[in-house]
Image (cartoon, rainbow, N blue to C red):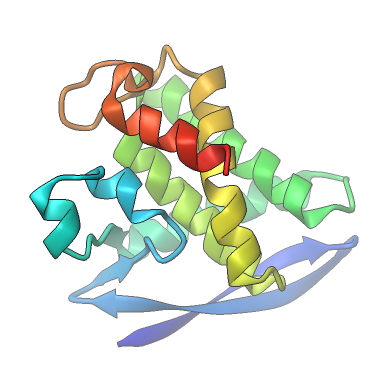
Length: 172
């Protein structure tokens, strides 16, 4: 089932209500529409060939994450909404690192999923969002590489096979 989410976002200095729809299931928002599947399950494994990966979070957590990004974006005075939302999602991730001492890659992708849906709400095309997604993820991982950890092993993410996939996707 799809559900509509609305947020008050400042675009070109004017706050308006912007909406998007996202799939929901059993109280969770399935968030990974814009995320490359290879970042969730890798490449070449049997799982990546037969499974359609899903990433998501509880609806209230998703709304809170989006609200946190929007609040930071709205506080930015720059007229470029992509810049404002990009700075905001980066700020939310830094807040997470300051609070927890690390950022699991899976959590990073959830923040990026929120960012992506917010971009959709202000008029970005799906193809644009899918194109910039891995580029932004890689930039953030490279800047915060001491704090971004693999969700399963807690190793620094930049030493994993998925990081190599991310690097390739970001350079396409």
